[in-house]
Image (tube, rainbow, N blue to C red):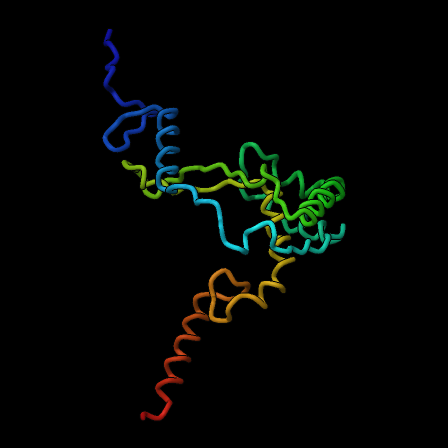
Length: 200
């Protein structure tokens, strides 16, 4: 009878950076890798705009119909954190969930505080190549709480009109219905306008 080779790499063993490890060790190591890549935490903000003395205006409250509208737009095929309940529950039971959810989100809009639980994400490493051998061959995919994503959309919609009056017109990133093509068109227009000016 043949003795099993203790050095043989099994299907459940991963070899990353030349080191064989079991799934548990891989999870711990890639978690540390992602943490190190993220860098140090930012220091406390000392800007005047971030102080508690700055006057703030609570955002407009949300109606039941608005909550239902957002719940109907949920994508039930999107993956969520394992700590979260499935998105389809909120989608199919929106009549049951809309009133307590309205209360939570309106409280959030009134206090200008986002629930800590909804800020959390679960990082899932996704292979960039078929046979990864380094930690950088894994792309981190953030799985978020679906109600947290829904709340983010609501806050963005509530703030969009205010932000449009603050943000510089030449900023194209993170703008609604504006992208890199618009930035290139603006750049081309600036160049041609300068070329059309008579030389001094």
